[in-house]
Length: 258
Image (cartoon, rainbow, N blue to C red; front, side):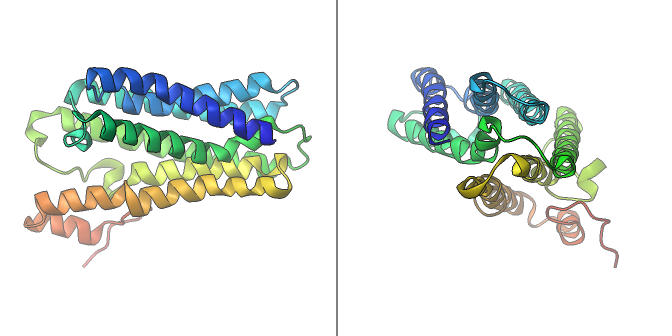
């Protein structure tokens, strides 16, 4: 299992380094998010390939990671092609050192999150609790569906010229201000739950993966950044303040009533 950790670490950094080299030399934003999703897909595929006798439940976990990563990579790539640039990099795009630091921390984050499935896809344990594995996969599938619907609704909303400089509060966004992040969190906790029958001992430290992505989205780079940006942009708009007051932050819930 230590070999799996080392191999996965090297794999992630090699993939990210290749993408980073092109992105830094071209000063391009178009590869950062694309490489994010694809790195998970390539890593999971390599772990399955190196496992001499993967069982059907490991293939199910791999399939979950594969579809999640591929969907995210395609969606984010389509989005950046439309928006042309990512505002996050406005102050670092022209600095090779600062841009390289972003890629380094992205690689670290990918590896930490991947701990969720590294041990389970490398495991030789026979699954003896099908209900736990299936329950985890159901949680992940629900998360993927929520995330996909939320992203698609927001993408279509922003495509319409009349919605320029507006916030979305229709569809699933009527029930949560950040349903895409809620779906993302469900995906990773579901993968961890489905992995439980395939891991043992210190391998349960793989819970660091879903804990890390949950903390990242709720406290660091996800919700806080968007909430701050929306408050600056719409903070004086009574309709937005009403939407913010009456709508759940993360978990989709019925809007509050007066």
